[in-house]
Image (cartoon, rainbow over all chains, first blue to last red; front, side):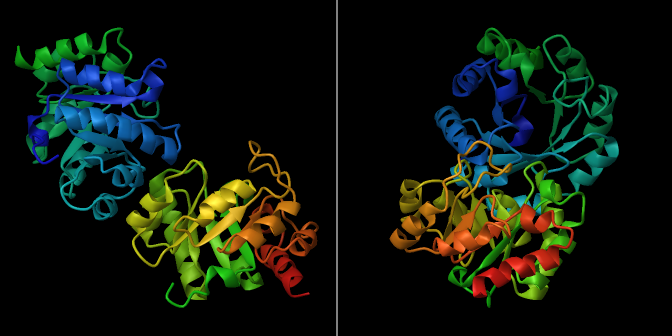
Length: 211
Length: 211
């Protein structure tokens, strides 16, 4: 993404997740999300094997490239490298940041999940491009992690140098509280992927940032 | 592996698989297998996330490096690249060979699974180092694939240029039939990993090739 905006300009980060898409076409959902204002798309499918991830990733990449929006792959650094995606998001149990960076090569975006102030401060010292903090609210996607609550957002945002992506149970109802707590970017899964009209849902979420 | 023997010299290919190891230490099983005569070790753990695969892979790599035996990682090209393993084994639903080769860089071993003569002939035209053919016998590891039977071994071996690794339900009892059918190398999982004495089991299997 030569002309991609930097992560600090992101407001709406849409995760296109197979398990939340109700069987619908992921590339179409990504397209609708982008039309609605998504600044970045992450592709996540915890159940798929690398071959089908690469195929689906290439379909998504056509959509995101045409729109000039970066595509981030969840976890699989090899899939991202294989298809030339714009970056990778690493969870706590994925590859180390420096290994991912080495495999991906220069100019790619690396994000890392954090679930506490301590983890956020540690990630902030790594060679990442952004860090995610959450789950802000309870979410079925991360049943193993207790929700950290919106109060952590301000603490993290004031103490880290990297852009912060808030994540976890954020939807149209909770987003104003997240923004009031200091969030400049929110990641959503079900709020767009599972919406009857993903484009309209994305548009409403995006609008919350400019109000 | 600068001094690794070429794949064509392999006879006993031991897959160290978490699900077959009965909770025992994988690095220790690998060490025992090598002492018993394993020519190559593959690390496979379909349930683990990349971070723990990389940690376990590094432990295995210490054992295999010390013994001068190559370590192949199943599926995860990124994990193999991260730890500097000697190669990757790709299943039918993993990344394409050329993508894996590009990510791994030069001098690494690439193997590919095939389940028919047609697939073996196609894989033989790819930039691989060896191809696997199987499952020769029924195996709980590959319940989705019908066993191809030992008769396929000779057909494949006589028509492909690459070294052939036979796999699937091979144990001490069936190995003589596999060798008689033309196999020069056999991959085993449970026959070593689940054996009470992995070293003795590997030694008996290896011996079948020289008798």
